[in-house]
Length: 101
Image 1 (cartoon, rainbow, N blue to C red):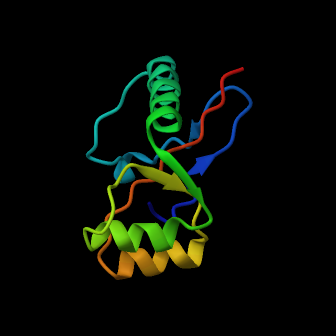
Image 2 (image 1 turned 120 degrees about the horizontal axis):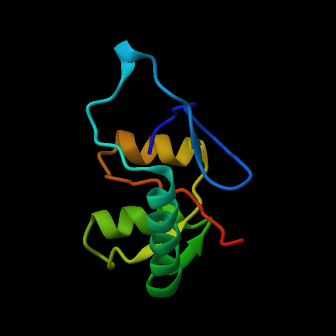
């Protein structure tokens, strides 16, 4: 998870701004249509198999980091909570919410 502003909402799919040539990341790319399918599957899997802890995400993430609960949960921490978790060395991954149309 990061504070990047490089991701915008679009009508049909996540819209990633094209980076300038000197700023192209070293990560790999996939075609947009494939990315939509992957995001759709990932969102379905998370919502099916993980517990939604909502606003309690930061509290549950700290428990999981200490080994006091499993890591199969998701939620919506505030930006401040997210930054604190990252400062504490807790590894997070932001999953873009992709809604089926």
